[in-house]
Length: 344
Image (cartoon, one colour):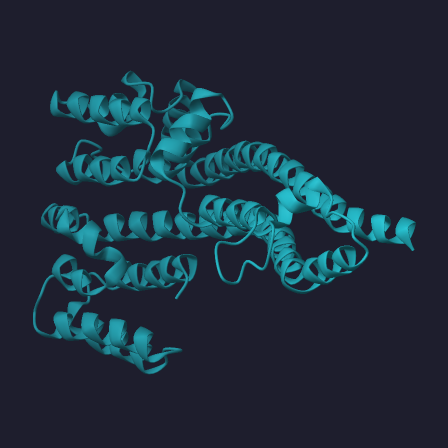
């Protein structure tokens, strides 16, 4: 199953458990009914494992360790801590929303890199076909006429059939570019995100991402609860930027000093003051839900813009490389044809 789809399925599970926290006896049967309607055996097995753990009397936090996506989360025991503090429903709701956000981010990134990957994939196929069928035929025709193969063609396609050795440059270059694009789309390394930030390419997208993920917690009462500390650790593990991780650590330190999550996040610079001010006024006017939804929408729009700027810049570079490879491929293929035409 794709990562985005896996996160979406997990978010649905957490939403069901969040709503059923106060009715533990019926939870195993409800999860079992979802298992029976699952779309695949793998999905059915995941739902059934959670239902069995609940039926055996395990806590929800322990039961979720049977769910592949949540093993790392549950090992941090912060769901058990939230349950001990009577805030399990809020914790599950937060985690469901966070995983849903991660699913949307994965899908968005794949959409950005689909066309560059397709273009480079076509270039690889054309280069392979040309190096196996077209170039050997042109080379044989030139040899029959006593003509030398153009130098650029020799460099780009090699001196002979490559099926017995390494692929020629004509295949290796677009293949390397294709692998790079797939890597950018599927599994960017943390050092690459740090590099984007160093060259100011990411337009603050990681700052916005952390604000967007923590926003649902800021409006909750008793923001100094221990499970919020563990949520900050959970978020920190998925953030590759050292500066933001340092601010998350500062926020935890402020909370250990007695501050609420909102106060600590403001003091560390993790959350902008205007967001805190709007939530404070909304709390006094009894309009927290509406303001929270509006702030979430605005932050999400800003985050989408920041991501679009980064992906557009990267795509531009990829298209430049693709155009260069296509131009070199055409030149290397058509020079022998022009040479044959002049000789004939």
